[in-house]
Amino acid sequence: MIFINPRGAPELACDHCGCRWVDRLKGTAYCYECGEEITAASIAEFQQALTEFAARSGSGDKPGP
Ligand SMILES: [Zn+2]
Image (cartoon, rainbow, N blue to C red; front, side, top):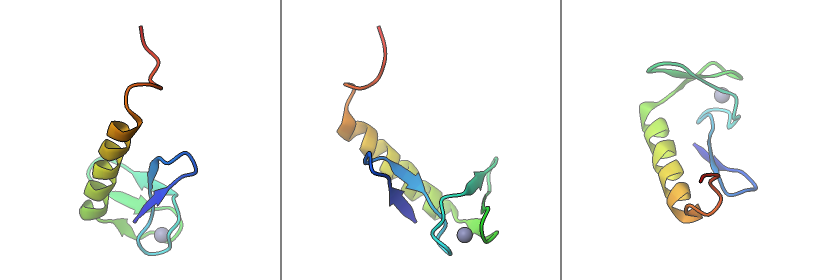
């Protein structure tokens, strides 16, 4: 599942227990709390949410030259 933090940014959370302690290693992600695998679909959904968040927040708050 996707959790939206108070700043509006998406965070990846466990589908089974809802916690956000997710151990994302290469290829596979596991929940720290219950040990369930985070599905590829959830990760894809999270990446999409991140992209949308980045597009929404624009380039205004990125440090740069
Ligand atoms: Zn869990």
